[in-house]
Amino acid sequence: MKHLLPDVMSLLRTDLSNLNESLPIPIISSSTDLSETFHHFNESPYLLVQDEGLPMGYISLNDVLQQMLHAHRLIEAYFETTLETAGTALTLINEEAKVAYWTSGAEHVFSINKKDIIGQPAADFFPPDRLQSLKTLYTGETVYRKQHQPRPDLFALINARPVVLDGRIVGAVAAEVDITTEIRLHQELLHMTSKVQHLEKAVARLRPDLDPFAGIKGSSPVIKQCLETIRKISTTSATVLILGESGTGKELFAKAIHDLREPQTAPFIAINCGAIPASLFESELFGYEKGAFSGADPKGKKGKIELAEGGTLFLDEIGEMPLELQVKLLRVLQEKSYFPVGGTRMKQANCRIIAATNQNLLGMIAKNQFREDLYYRLNVINLIIPPLRMRKEDIYELTQSFLQEFSLLYNRHIELVPPEVFKLLFSYEWPGNVRELRNVIERITILTTDGEVKPEYLPESLTLTVELPSSTADEPATLQTITDLASLSSTGDVREIIQEDNNGPSFEVSPLSYQEQMDAYESNLLLQCLQSTGGNKRTLARQLGISRATLYNRMKRLGL
Image 1 (cartoon, rainbow, N blue to C red):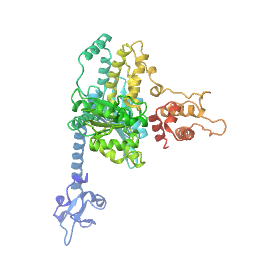
Image 2: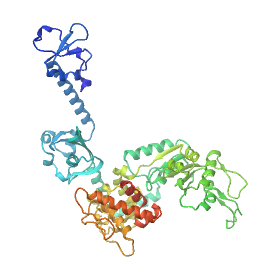
Image 3: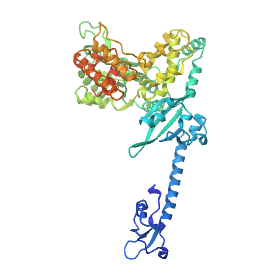
Image 4: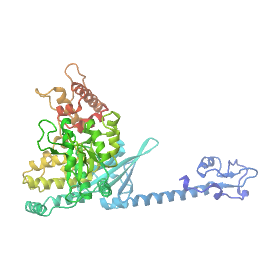
């Protein structure tokens, strides 16, 4: 507020005869900030303004209060205009859980007039167990883009944050975006008949889609930004490095770049650097001449670089490329030439190169596992693919696409996907990203024989109904227990007391220490199992029956 207050001299009164000289009057300088004068009025309703010599005049408490009131009204006008311009349903509840502010966006989303709800308990209008702002008020929990269902007929994405004053929660603010229409539209789309689906498939075969982005589903801001970046990349022939977690669809984005900047007849050659043995990598990449080595094709063989001539060579999982091959690839990038295995005649590399990885290449450089010069040659332009947890609003469109694909493949007619199934899909963090979602949709399509998807068709990691089983005889107890604990501690749905029989610690569950005991127990088991595998996380994840991403996320949460 102090920035909206005038200076002291603008309130100066010069008629000193109005002052009561029998009372002590504090003195301030003309340069004093008006916001710093308030405590002086405890002694007198007037303050003398004096720099040197005689007083220049005085300011009165009444004038200052008038200016404060004006500044307050100005701030309130700014505040209200800002909230109304935000375009979302913004609500504010105070310390008593009553609605203190309700924007026109909230009126539109919830069909409740602000004059009817402001000043009233929020729980009078919504079920308390469905109100995220109440949970934020009581627990201090902050959420971002979380699926929220304030009423049975309403779905929203919500951001919520507590209002803190002097270290104490005095309210909560929530911003919500209505996604009910999208869900209902999705339900309507799922009512297509099998005949129409098969006709669409037949039409697609007769008239292939030439849109380079046809395979990339989603309309979230981060995906739109990726597509805009691809459009800019496609105007150049520069080398591109695509970064993203496993399962985000990096090859799909690489193909889009290729389709945009290359002729329709240009080849797109993909090679997975992690799937080829080091001994065969050089011949796969550069090809070989006849008689280059025993067992070689007598006619020789073209390498991937030559096959990609005039088009694009896509090097997936570039972080897995052997170090000795990295040097030769660097030569190709620098000089646009190479020698086939066993060859004496240099060939020209006439192709664009796109590389992709889910690894931290800079971290690998620090460990001498990846060449720094190759990294900078590859990283002329980079494209970062967001994980699915950062673009959850695309789940509906992706689900629709996958359902259509698999309903045709398995001859299943999906009539209904209930909201509770979408809620589970939306609440999950998707460590396997779009690939994992695709597998889940394939699973539920196969299991759906009556036209309606049911929550029990989803994997246990999504249904949040895991119970703690006893270890089996044919599997180590520690591995079984730690797998169960990983599920249980993430769901919070545990009804048993964990106890070790002999040497291990005994835990008694209490409301204050339960989660800490669970985390400590799980950390101990993870360390033991990791030690038994010699520190190999890939092996440990396989033994536990979970993905490496899930294991890494679990270890990160436990601080291991």
